[in-house]
Image (cartoon, rainbow, N blue to C red):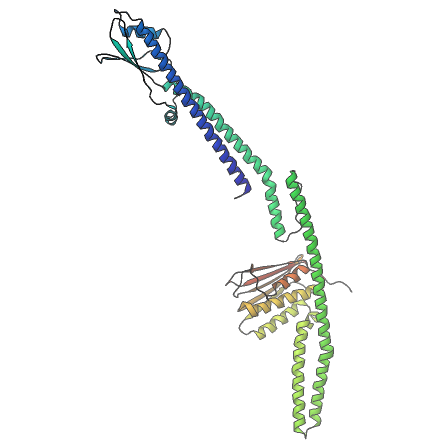
Length: 443
């Protein structure tokens, strides 16, 4: 639920409460007004009737006198007047009604404001005649119509105000909160590693302060990442230089020494044909020296693949996958390359080689894959490396120790690129590396 939605919901609820409170107040006032008007009408009518009966002579019809007396006071409200004599005779008098409003209020309003029936009963003695009982009850219909006309106007104004105010608040909040979406998108880009993101001036002091701090943070992260990339690049270069030095030392010192031992053992065996024991020992020494030399050659290939320096990246990767297939009979690695990679710098060639080497090691040790694909392509301005397997897969958020993935990502970032990992338990793993090409420099 967004901040804008929550604020609009809160303000809408507030307007609803205001509208309900206003409606209750309008209904309360209308109900009180109707009750006061009907009570006043009933009381006035009773007083007029009392005066009328006081002026009735013995030879006059009480009804004619009462009606004539009421008519002199103009229009009256909707009334029901019952005259009841001592014998129980009843006569209903309905005075001439005033012009009622043509507005018909809704039933719910009538039910809310209609007062409870409160008839007024008076005992009146007519001079020279018997006593009469007067029952006056006012019908609040006309008052309710007038109250509805006033309440409708007030409620309409209140509803219009709430709708307009709520709409104005909705669009105003949308306008002023729009920069927050921009800030969130920029933060998302920062989370994805795009430290070049910057926020423009927004126009609000608080958000401008956030934008300024964000830009400062992004600049610091970009500087820190560049420094880390340079440090990682130097660290990897030093590591590869050490490996190259060790490989040369093994080749120049240990390799030559082992070769010399083997040659001497063969020479001793050839000079002692009549001494079988010496010849056998010399043969054993020669075989042992040969195994040591093969082990040294394997170590030299691990430390620094000579084929990478002599033939280039594509032959080195082809040789790497061929050797991997020879040692893993239950799985097979497909290698494909598209493009010219002869102009790549030494650091880029060895880093791409090491990433493939580490990925194949992981596929053999952890993935339990039957098929691995290594695809190297050169695109305009980019070099794309994709390594996929059909192994057991994993959850990318939980990287197991020993998989070498941080090292591969470090190598990709040291080349100014990025490494993405896509995997799902039971569906294998895909490693994608995208780097800008770094060509060889003279010297």
